[in-house]
Image (cartoon, rainbow, N blue to C red; front, side, top):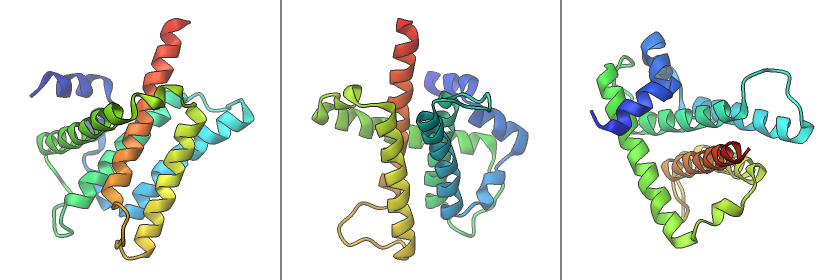
Length: 178
């Protein structure tokens, strides 16, 4: 197992929840995964707009949840409908790692081409862009998964992951400066 995966297992609640609940998330259809991400993004947006929150769960945890649900969505997309709902923990870790690597590689490629423009963006913009990507996925689903010119559901999930990662990086840098 790579050092990155070891670190992810320690700091990421996904693996702890997988140990507690197994792969119960396998029963979720794409629209349900989209709705889970929407709930988290909408909560962040509401807190941003109201400038207060009543539940202690912090915004960074919501961004991590968005990342994890987007990875769940990617895993679900590649699993055949006939696949078992119960996936061994090591296989889940491998699938998770694969999608983290793909999203990270995409982020690095785009970061190269866009020159770290994301560093000048607001947390509000990242949330809005995540919500846009969710609307796009909903539209693709209403088109029976077909697109004419646009990227598919997987590309939107990868963008969602990257927007959430950018938000977390900026949040951590802001906390470090304080």
